[in-house]
Length: 255
Image 1 (cartoon, one colour):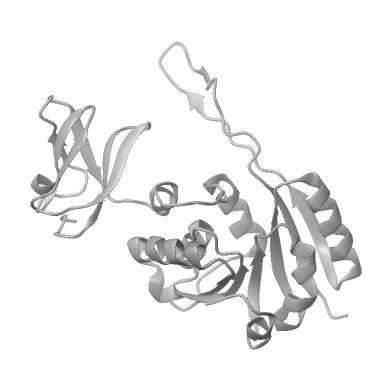
Image 2 (cartoon, rainbow, N blue to C red; image 1 turned 90 degrees about the vertical axis):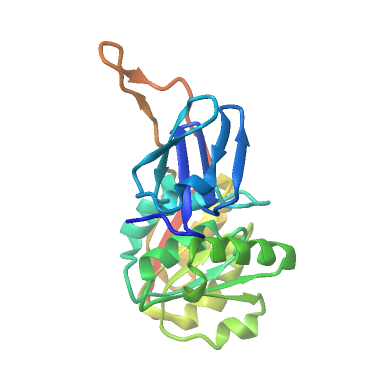
C-alpha cells in the first residue's frame, strides 16, 4: 500500500523513538536523530524507509490502533492497551455492538472500541468537561474513528433515550452511582465495565453490583512485562508499567 498525501505514517527508529505524523510533501521533522524529510515518504510503500541527514534509517509503518492511542493528545490518565484485550474478550466486543461510554476523557478507549465495533456498531460517549470533549474529538478525527462515535455532554436524561446497549463503560471516580441509570438501557445479559483507580472504589463498586441487578462480577488488574530478547542474554526488562487501573466487570440480569 502506497503512502499518499495526508496519510498517517508511523516514522519508526526503535521502540522508544517513533513519531506519528501525516505525510505532507513540504513537511520536515527535526529530531535529535537528524531531520526527517516527511515529504519524501509520499509515494513510497509502507514498510520502506528514509534516512535522516545524520544517516539514521527511519522505517515507514502503517499505524495500528495501539499507535494511535499511545500517540494521542491527552490531558487525563488513559486506560492502557494492556487492558483493552481483556475488556474485549470478557465482554464479547464485536462488530455491530452499541456501546455506551460515560467518561470520554481523551477518547483513547473510545478509539479502541470504535475500531472493533465498526462499521455496523456505534459508540455513544458522554463527558461533562468541554475541554476534554474538544481534545477527544481531535483524537477521534486523527484516528479516523469519528464516523463511529457520537459525543454528547453528560445528562442523565440523554442516557435514558438510548436502548438495547450491548456494552457499558464507566470511567469515573464513582461508577456505582451510575449503575441505576445505565441498567434500564442495557440488553439483558449485557456487560458493564468500570474503571477504578483505587481498591476502595472497586470495593464500593462490587457491593453495588451485587445489590443492583448485576451478576458474573469479575474484578481484575492486568500486568504486562516486556522481555528483552537478545541472543545469549534474554531477560525480563528492568522497567515495566505498574498499576494503571482496576477493572470491574458485571452482567445485567432482570431485577
